[in-house]
Length: 218
Image (cartoon, rainbow, N blue to C red):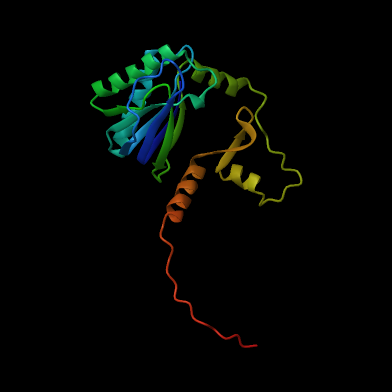
């Protein structure tokens, strides 16, 4: 199971069309939830309901840290190429919803099997976005980390010391992974912090200025 966890100011989505025959019946309208932790979930082959419960246990712990108690389980197939069969995936996702409710978490779920338009605003703190892997795929990731010879090692020869690739890795802002893409930077915690601060700055209203004509003295 792969999960992208986002602590959001709000999320708004609208089901637009069914992707698969097993898609749930749902009203086509806009759904909006505010101040919520969103779990974008890809259920993979060999995942079990126990894997889903482990994910909910972790989000429960996270909710305690942020003093929140509201989540949205959002089926999101785009995180994996090793997806479970639709009926199996839906069963596990429903199990996650029921387990979360049994733990007194205010829980919502996006419809399964639909293409959805999506608008989300993520909060601006370092832990607001987290990617997680559970189950057999998580064990496989650990084995790949230990045995993989495909890690990207930056060749610093001929690069100036202030090259962005050197600074990014030395300051733990971003890194690269071959299985994701040689040219795709992956934010590390320092990078996530900087990104959110920039997003906060960009969302501030532009300052007003009084312009005066100044004559140049040459």
